[in-house]
Length: 179
Image (cartoon, rainbow, N blue to C red; front, side, top):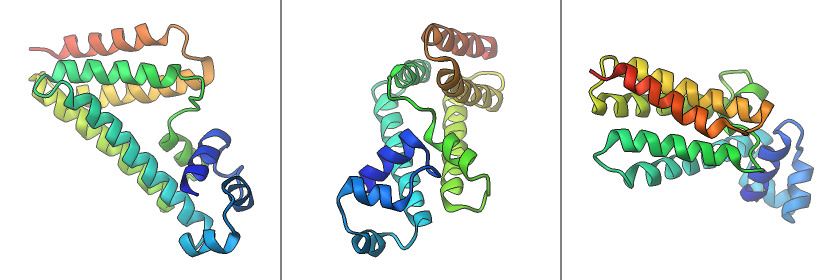
Protein backbone atom coordinates (compact mmCIF):
# COMPACT_ATOMS: atom_id res chain seq x y z
CA UNK A 1 0.00 0.00 0.00
CA UNK A 2 2.75 2.48 0.90
CA UNK A 3 4.66 1.48 -2.26
CA UNK A 4 1.61 2.35 -4.32
CA UNK A 5 1.23 5.69 -2.55
CA UNK A 6 4.91 6.46 -3.09
CA UNK A 7 4.65 5.71 -6.80
CA UNK A 8 1.43 7.64 -7.34
CA UNK A 9 2.27 10.62 -5.12
CA UNK A 10 5.70 11.01 -6.68
CA UNK A 11 4.63 10.61 -10.31
CA UNK A 12 1.29 12.43 -10.22
CA UNK A 13 1.47 14.75 -7.23
CA UNK A 14 0.01 14.29 -3.79
CA UNK A 15 -3.00 16.55 -4.20
CA UNK A 16 -3.82 14.98 -7.57
CA UNK A 17 -4.09 11.50 -6.10
CA UNK A 18 -7.04 10.61 -3.92
CA UNK A 19 -7.34 7.77 -1.48
CA UNK A 20 -9.57 5.92 -3.96
CA UNK A 21 -6.75 5.89 -6.53
CA UNK A 22 -4.35 4.41 -3.97
CA UNK A 23 -6.94 1.79 -3.02
CA UNK A 24 -7.68 0.91 -6.65
CA UNK A 25 -4.02 0.59 -7.62
CA UNK A 26 -2.92 -1.29 -4.49
CA UNK A 27 -5.88 -3.64 -4.38
CA UNK A 28 -6.48 -3.18 -0.65
CA UNK A 29 -9.88 -2.43 0.79
CA UNK A 30 -10.79 1.00 2.05
CA UNK A 31 -11.21 -0.37 5.58
CA UNK A 32 -7.74 -1.93 5.42
CA UNK A 33 -6.19 1.36 4.32
CA UNK A 34 -7.95 3.27 7.09
CA UNK A 35 -6.89 0.68 9.69
CA UNK A 36 -3.31 1.50 8.79
CA UNK A 37 -3.68 5.22 8.03
CA UNK A 38 -6.40 7.21 9.80
CA UNK A 39 -6.38 9.89 7.11
CA UNK A 40 -4.75 10.93 3.86
CA UNK A 41 -2.48 13.17 5.92
CA UNK A 42 -1.23 10.09 7.78
CA UNK A 43 -0.56 8.40 4.43
CA UNK A 44 1.28 11.51 3.24
CA UNK A 45 3.42 11.46 6.38
CA UNK A 46 4.20 7.78 5.81
CA UNK A 47 5.14 8.61 2.20
CA UNK A 48 7.46 11.38 3.40
CA UNK A 49 9.03 9.21 6.10
CA UNK A 50 9.71 6.38 3.65
CA UNK A 51 11.15 8.76 1.05
CA UNK A 52 13.35 10.25 3.77
CA UNK A 53 14.52 6.80 4.89
CA UNK A 54 15.34 5.82 1.31
CA UNK A 55 17.17 9.09 0.65
CA UNK A 56 19.46 8.68 3.65
CA UNK A 57 20.07 5.03 2.82
CA UNK A 58 21.13 6.14 -0.68
CA UNK A 59 23.32 8.90 0.78
CA UNK A 60 24.98 6.58 3.32
CA UNK A 61 25.70 3.92 0.70
CA UNK A 62 27.48 6.53 -1.42
CA UNK A 63 29.45 8.18 1.37
CA UNK A 64 30.39 4.88 3.05
CA UNK A 65 32.16 3.78 -0.13
CA UNK A 66 34.59 6.66 0.38
CA UNK A 67 34.82 6.77 4.18
CA UNK A 68 37.54 9.12 5.39
CA UNK A 69 37.80 10.88 2.02
CA UNK A 70 35.41 13.86 2.18
CA UNK A 71 36.26 15.23 -1.25
CA UNK A 72 35.55 11.86 -2.85
CA UNK A 73 32.34 11.59 -0.81
CA UNK A 74 31.12 14.94 -2.12
CA UNK A 75 32.14 14.09 -5.69
CA UNK A 76 30.35 10.74 -5.44
CA UNK A 77 27.22 12.42 -4.04
CA UNK A 78 27.11 14.87 -6.92
CA UNK A 79 27.70 12.07 -9.39
CA UNK A 80 24.81 10.21 -7.72
CA UNK A 81 22.56 13.27 -7.96
CA UNK A 82 23.44 13.51 -11.65
CA UNK A 83 22.37 9.87 -12.05
CA UNK A 84 19.08 10.52 -10.23
CA UNK A 85 18.11 13.49 -12.36
CA UNK A 86 19.04 11.69 -15.58
CA UNK A 87 16.52 8.94 -14.82
CA UNK A 88 13.50 9.25 -17.15
CA UNK A 89 11.22 8.67 -14.13
CA UNK A 90 12.70 11.66 -12.27
CA UNK A 91 9.99 14.11 -11.30
CA UNK A 92 11.93 16.30 -8.93
CA UNK A 93 12.86 16.13 -5.31
CA UNK A 94 9.98 14.52 -3.40
CA UNK A 95 10.64 16.84 -0.45
CA UNK A 96 10.56 20.03 -2.48
CA UNK A 97 7.46 18.74 -4.27
CA UNK A 98 5.75 17.98 -0.97
CA UNK A 99 6.60 21.36 0.56
CA UNK A 100 5.33 23.07 -2.60
CA UNK A 101 2.03 21.21 -2.50
CA UNK A 102 1.62 21.71 1.25
CA UNK A 103 3.09 25.10 2.15
CA UNK A 104 1.70 24.91 5.70
CA UNK A 105 4.90 24.32 7.66
CA UNK A 106 2.87 22.57 10.36
CA UNK A 107 1.70 19.84 7.98
CA UNK A 108 3.44 16.64 9.07
CA UNK A 109 4.63 15.82 5.56
CA UNK A 110 6.07 19.30 5.08
CA UNK A 111 7.78 19.08 8.47
CA UNK A 112 9.48 15.86 7.35
CA UNK A 113 10.50 17.53 4.08
CA UNK A 114 11.99 20.48 5.97
CA UNK A 115 13.84 18.13 8.31
CA UNK A 116 15.30 16.33 5.29
CA UNK A 117 16.57 19.59 3.79
CA UNK A 118 18.07 20.75 7.09
CA UNK A 119 19.79 17.38 7.53
CA UNK A 120 21.18 17.48 3.99
CA UNK A 121 22.61 20.94 4.63
CA UNK A 122 24.12 19.79 7.94
CA UNK A 123 25.67 16.70 6.39
CA UNK A 124 27.19 18.78 3.59
CA UNK A 125 28.54 21.23 6.18
CA UNK A 126 30.12 18.29 8.04
CA UNK A 127 31.77 17.10 4.84
CA UNK A 128 33.01 20.64 4.21
CA UNK A 129 34.44 20.77 7.76
CA UNK A 130 36.24 17.48 7.09
CA UNK A 131 37.76 19.14 4.00
CA UNK A 132 39.16 21.90 6.24
CA UNK A 133 37.81 24.69 4.04
CA UNK A 134 37.76 28.34 5.09
CA UNK A 135 34.02 28.55 5.67
CA UNK A 136 32.50 25.07 5.90
CA UNK A 137 28.99 26.26 6.73
CA UNK A 138 28.95 28.48 3.67
CA UNK A 139 30.25 25.71 1.42
CA UNK A 140 27.71 23.25 2.83
CA UNK A 141 24.92 25.74 2.21
CA UNK A 142 26.15 26.38 -1.34
CA UNK A 143 26.36 22.67 -2.12
CA UNK A 144 22.83 22.13 -0.78
CA UNK A 145 21.55 24.97 -2.97
CA UNK A 146 23.37 23.49 -5.95
CA UNK A 147 21.71 20.10 -5.45
CA UNK A 148 18.26 21.60 -5.04
CA UNK A 149 18.85 23.84 -8.06
CA UNK A 150 19.85 20.82 -10.13
CA UNK A 151 16.61 19.08 -9.12
CA UNK A 152 14.59 22.07 -10.30
CA UNK A 153 16.58 22.53 -13.49
CA UNK A 154 16.18 18.87 -14.43
CA UNK A 155 12.41 19.02 -13.95
CA UNK A 156 11.92 22.23 -15.90
CA UNK A 157 14.58 22.03 -18.63
CA UNK A 158 15.68 18.41 -18.56
CA UNK A 159 18.95 16.82 -17.55
CA UNK A 160 20.82 17.26 -20.85
CA UNK A 161 24.31 18.59 -20.14
CA UNK A 162 23.51 19.00 -16.48
CA UNK A 163 25.88 16.29 -15.20
CA UNK A 164 29.03 18.08 -16.31
CA UNK A 165 27.81 21.49 -15.14
CA UNK A 166 26.68 20.14 -11.78
CA UNK A 167 29.97 18.40 -11.05
CA UNK A 168 32.06 21.28 -12.42
CA UNK A 169 30.17 23.82 -10.30
CA UNK A 170 30.60 21.72 -7.16
CA UNK A 171 34.35 21.51 -7.91
CA UNK A 172 34.60 25.29 -8.37
CA UNK A 173 32.79 25.90 -5.07
CA UNK A 174 35.03 23.47 -3.19
CA UNK A 175 38.26 24.74 -4.74
CA UNK A 176 37.33 28.35 -3.93
CA UNK A 177 37.03 27.43 -0.24
CA UNK A 178 40.21 25.38 0.17
CA UNK A 179 42.86 26.94 2.34
